[in-house]
Amino acid sequence: MKKIFARLIKDESGATAIEYGLIAALISVALIGGATALGSALNTQFANLGTFMNVGTAPAP
Image (tube, rainbow, N blue to C red; front, side, top):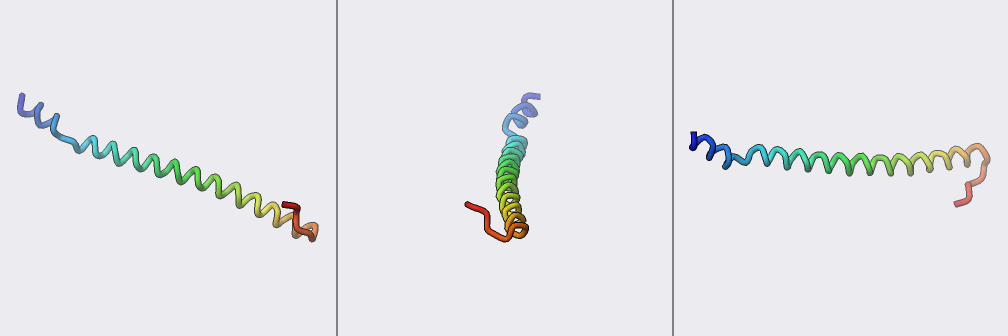
């Protein structure tokens, strides 16, 4: 029983899996944040383009 407990204490595969999970979560949060910012910028750009096409003049910056 003592050997089994000692082997479980030395096993680090669970800790490695948790670390990989945390890295994947951080990367996904960064991707979501970047996609949100890019989407907002694209929305503004297309709105300006639509205004330009309807009015015929470029909107003020």
